[in-house]
Amino acid sequence: METEDVKKMNAPKKILIINGPNLNMLGIREPDLYGAVTHEKLVGLLANWCREAGVGHDYFQSNHEGAIVDRIQEAYFEGVDGIVMNPAAYTHTSVAILDALKATAIPTVEIHITDVSTREDFRRVSYVALAAKHRIMGHGIEGYREAIGWLVDYLNKA
Ligand SMILES: O=C1C[C@@](O)(C(=O)O)C[C@@H](O)[C@@H]1O
Image (cartoon, rainbow, N blue to C red; front, side):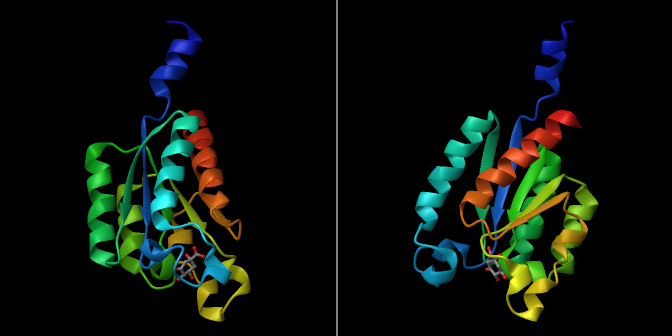
């Protein structure tokens, strides 16, 4: 078999993008911090960026911790190759989401629109970071594009 064929066989096929609580309010929510791009617009951008990166994707947004845990577990049984995740407020509180990421061992990139390291003290703690392969923060919506690119590169090399 040619090297190019092996590369294609091993290329990541599908990633899951998860947005946590209140990210469905993008465009309305504190635009000075989170910008003017609406959630609907972001969903379209994510689809474009995944297409550009040559990877399929599913998108999931929830305001509920358990629903996010369920979705991560489902991703494992579906054979999803990687996760891009903005856990939003659950970043700073959720042992359950950390445990789901550890249980499934799906390579995950954590992304935040704002730079959580320069905001309130409680935002400096990230449980998800303990399982994430990479973190991107403070690059606005563009951070999602970087996260997709980073994950696809990582999966291609893995
Ligand atoms: O909801 C969010 C969004 C956020 O994850 C971000 O994308 O900057 C930062 C979190 O602290 C906050 O709770």
